[in-house]
Image (cartoon, rainbow, N blue to C red; front, side, top):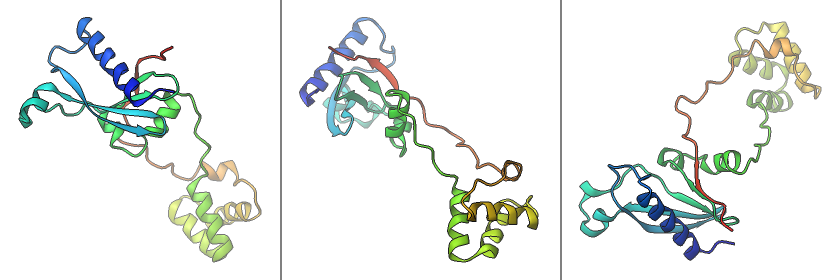
Amino acid sequence: MVTKERAVELVEALLSRQRQESLWRAWMPEVAVVDVEEHAFGWLVFLQSVEYIRSRDIGKMLIGEGPYLVDRQDGSIHHIPVTTFVGDRWEELYLQQVKGVRPPDEPDPLIVAVQVLVHSDGMTAAMRHLRKQAPLLGPHQAKAYVTAIRDGREPPEELVGLIPKPKQETCPPLPISTLAGPTR
């Protein structure tokens, strides 16, 4: 288990190596740890420009870097881009990208809605909702789709193919990158 103090040591050692090996971008100012927050996965370590820390001149503030996550179990260090961090999915992405945890299969929201409607308001209400979501389905096709769901079966593939797919994210989150580790 990595302690808070050890997490700070690991990040500071990484920053020192990056400066010595000229891996730090030339335009990047010198940075220091300004905050550490405990998280279920480990420690979120926040950095800030040393010039800003000293002067509080907003023009010297480091913006857009995002925190480092020091994994509580193995001490590995991961950078979470700020646009990914402020989103609501960074933890899920960490589990998928770094830990290799597959997300559970999420049920099709249309099937769930149709199930709820068919059992609460009946076949007609479920068919009406389905046809609003999938205008290419005719009345007989909608009935076959809803009947299958009502009876606990999967809807026929040829009908599923006529339903528009949800739009993909226009700006997917940036990937989490592993910077170091695991430590021994």
